[in-house]
Length: 457
Image 1 (cartoon, rainbow, N blue to C red):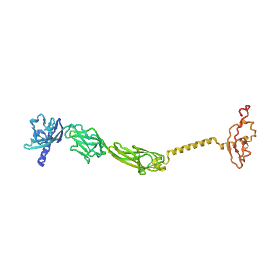
Image 2: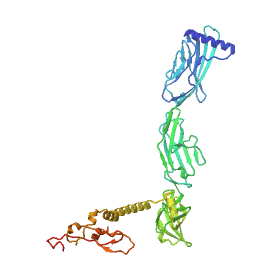
Image 3: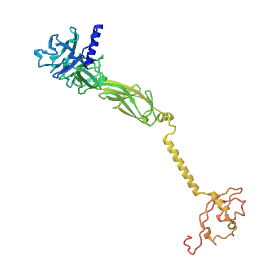
Image 4: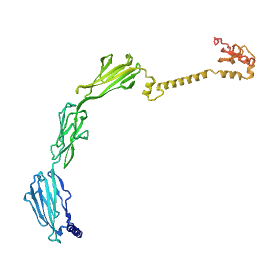
C-alpha cells in the first residue's frame, strides 16, 4: 500500500513539474453542507498521499456572512492549536485534517476555508499548497404550516378578492408552494404571490377558483410539509342553462309530442347556490307565469296549436339570471318517432306479442275443429263397411235397436240432384243407389225397447 502511494505521489509530482498543473492531494466530498441547528456537523477531508512521507502545516478559518474572518485551528502532524474561543465548540480530527462542529448555531453559518501546505520527505524544499472552501448553512426544521383566509366567508365572483396566507411557527429559509385540488399554482393575471410565496392574492375571484387549497412549506433540512385543507366557496352562475325532456322528438329548440301525451321538462343550470326557476308561457304577444321550480308538466290535449315556453333561472346571491326558450308542437310522430325512439327497430314489442297471441289462438281453434268434425272419416267408414252389413235386410228399427244406439254425424255430399232427406239407417242401401248423391242431415237416436217405459220418457 505504501509503495502504491509513493508511486502515485511520484506520478503527480512529475506531472506537476512537466505540465505545471496541480495534482489533487486532498479531496472534500461535499463543498456545501446544510446543517440542523443544535446538531453536530462534520467537514470531512480525505488526504490522497501517505502522511508518513510528508510534513504538513495548515489552518481552518471561518468567514461569516457579515465578512468577518476568524482562524479556528492551526495544525501540523505533531501539534494542534485551537482558537481559545472555540475549544469546546470544535474538534480537529487527526491525521486526516477534518473538522467537526460540535453543536451548530446560527453564528456557525458561513464559509470554512482550509489552507494546507505539503512537503514530501524526498523533495525537500518543494512545498505544495492546497486550499478548499466549504459553505455551511444552519437551518431550523419547518413545523406544519397553517392557512388563513380573508375574508373568512364565501365570496361572490367578479365582486370580491381573496387573500390566503400560509405561516409556520418554526423554520428558517422556508419556501412555500400553493396547490388547488392538488395542482400547483403559479403567478397569473389574477394570482399574485408575495416574495416568499407565503401570501396568495386572488383578484378578482371567479367560478374556477372554487376548490380545496393547501400550502406546502419546506427548507433545506425539511421535506415538504402540507397544511390542512381549506375550502374556498365561491358564489357564481347561472351558467349553461338547458331545457331537456326524455319524451317527444327534439329538433333544435322545438319539441314535438304526440296528441294526448303527458310531457315533463327539466330546466337545469350550473350555479352556486342553486337557482330559483320560473316557467313562462308566451302566446299572442303576452306572457304568463305558469309554474315555479325546475320541473314543468304539460298536457298536450290542452294545446290547440304550437306554443312557446321560457325557463328563467335566477341566482339570488349573484343577482344574475339566464333564460332558455323553446317551442312545443303537438303532432303525430308515427314511424318517424319510432325511428328516433327505437333507433332502427322495425317491429315494436307490442306488435310482436299481438301476432304471436293470434297465431296461438288460431292453432288452438283449428285443433278443436279437427277433433269435433271428421267428414272424411264418416264417409270412409260407410264405404269401407263389409258387404254383408251393407246388404243386411231392412228392419223396422225396433227389432234390434240396441245395435243402432249411439251418436251420428252430419255428412254433406254435393250432387247433381236436389238434396234428399234420408235417415242415417238408410246408408246401408248406398250400394244400390251409389250414383245418387244425398244429404244426411238428421240425427237418429235409437233407444232399445225395455219393459221400463220411464227410460223412453
